[in-house]
Image 1 (cartoon, rainbow, N blue to C red):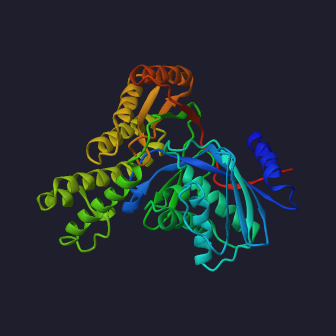
Image 2: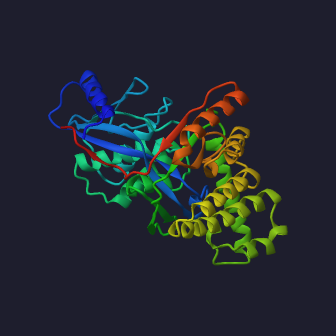
Image 3: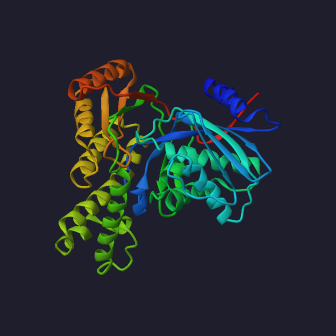
Length: 390
């Protein structure tokens, strides 16, 4: 089925690049992470799902070494030669250029391409629009040029592009769920081994609702890297007593408490949050297996408190939205989602209360800030895949 978004992109492609003999269309979803924040780069556990907000691509091959990109939502162009890829201050092309750079590093020759992309993954809201762009483009090139990359290789490719080229030291969660997501299932991912398990999310009378702060996440990238360094510093101290501790994944609360006086208070607080959050993810999976969403929702609130007080990546607007949600009928759980310092909250809301919840949250946020905020009602869908253009 050809979506309205794909029809618009097809028209844009013809307007900007002309007709084509052959092209691929790809849908690449955003994601939510129900619980398990900032645990991925600590080799812990996460519980994300792919959703119905997605980036869409139309990609056609070229043979002259040129790569031409058009970002439809921004109405912006960028062009380069495949053999002279350098980072640009323009920003958005780097997520595509990073994929080309990593493919070249791995020995894959791309002869050129024309790309049009756009979609409805909110930028800066914590739904990982960056991974949707990276993995959607990588998936398209893999199919277009028969590169033979596996799903796991595509996820790793997207992560390397963001780490090495874009310059954000993210874990692999966003790219992994983008590729491996399935309808009505969440993924419990072991971020060390990358073993994963599909956990059912079968309660049909619940919606995943995201409330955006509209706040600029100017600190997110820099503080993300700081938090990673702080966690690594804590592991370095603990490893002197527990030589087998490769990451906070291997640290128990008892071990952390025993050596608390050996580390700075801020380092201990960062480590304490991660150790607790890993345990919450495992327990939350058991809640879903039992279909106990009230217990699951309680853990979401606990997660937010840890992110606010110990990991210190929340913001006054995020805290306000979580507090507001907790007092509205039909909400089972809420927390901030994503890197922090803005973005959005994720809320589990009973379907019959979603309309009232949406109206109430918008009104409360408008009264607080004087500005409206976006509320997104999402559902869990499958990962990146080809879309028919016929």
